[in-house]
Each structure stands twice: as structure tokens, then as C-alpha cells.
Length: 183
Image 1 (tube, rainbow, N blue to C red):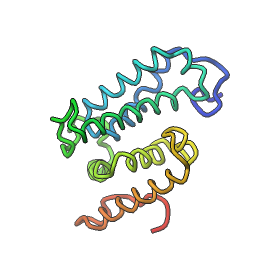
Image 2: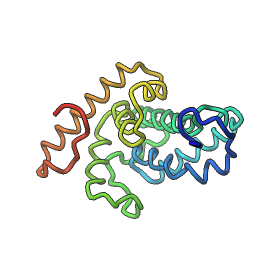
Image 3: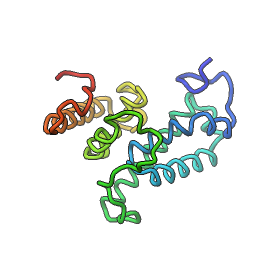
Image 4: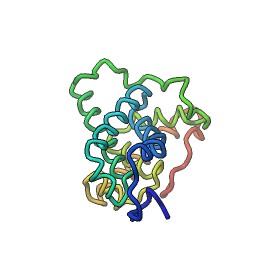
């Protein structure tokens, strides 16, 4: 029995149990989307607050994790738009390096990959994150973002092309891994 996978309706999960089991994965998503520990923590907290308020609806969804992940993605997109317009968090340096105390530094290329991801527009970044961090297919990403599968494929192709171009331009061409698709 998959508790959080697609079609997992065999038992209803308690909110506290959900947070204990899935908040780390949701935090990683928020962190990759924002690039800042504090922003990711705030984003996750707000998403979990919203999920808690509507837990009866979330708990019976096919995948409570996907439901909350969509909240995280929507909040990240909203905050990105606010930053671009000079909103409430306009003093945040979008080019700042990730926190050195980050427990996810195990991968050597993590910092360069995050910098490259954060150079992408938020739509492309979100599609790349959902594909490669969460292993969602085009249809699942389209449903999560409320766009067509063609838009997902276009954003993914353009995002990967930009990542490859950046990797090729770096002094260390192997700095970023190859992400599926044609070279």
C-alpha cells in the first residue's frame, strides 16, 4: 500500500503524521524553488497552514503530498511575481548563495546547479524541479500547474537548453549533469 502515491485512498492520513513523513521532501521542493533556507521555511509553513485549514479535503485527495506540493509551487510562483514587482520581499538578494549550513550539500555540483536553476524564469524552473526532483510526467506537471502538457514540454525543453548552455559556457563544462532529452 502506497500512502502518498497516486491513487492512495486506502486510508486517511492524519495531518501530524503527514507533516512528520513528508515535510522534508516538501521543504526540499521549496528550497530548490526559492534558493533560500528562510524563504523555503516560510513557504513550507504557509503551505502547511493552508493544508491544515482544509485537511478534510486534502486528506481524501488521491495524493495529499501532490495537493500540498501544488500549494508550495503556487506560493513560490506568487512570491516570485511579488519580488519581480518589488513587493514585500523586495530586499531579498535573489543571487545570494544558499546557506552554507544547508544539510543537502552532499552533492558537489549542488551549488552550481541551484545557481543555474535560479537563473531560469520561475515557470521553467518549476517544470524542471517537478520533473527531476519529483519525477512527475508531463500530464502530472500540467495538472499541478494548471497548464497544458504542451506548455510543460516547451518549458522543459527551453529550461534544459538554458541549463546546458550555461554548463557549456562555464569554465567547467561538466559542472552540471546532463538532464535527459536530446543533446
